[in-house]
View 1 (cartoon, rainbow, N blue to C red):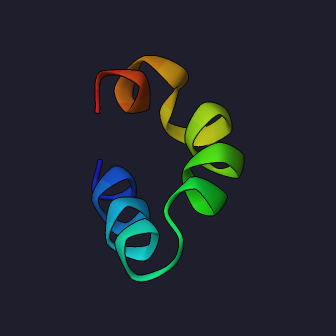
View 2 (cartoon, rainbow, N blue to C red):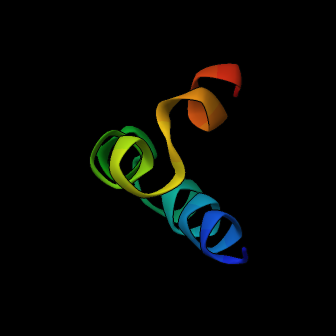
View 3 (cartoon, rainbow, N blue to C red):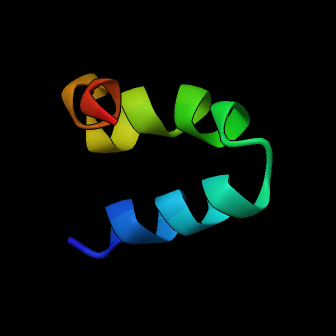
Length: 36
């Protein structure tokens, strides 16, 4: 799934917490972003 990589790239360009907080838990899953 390249979606996770795309969101990570977007999060790096933006605040990070904004996209990860909204898209992360819903799309990729909390476990993926909690480890990061």
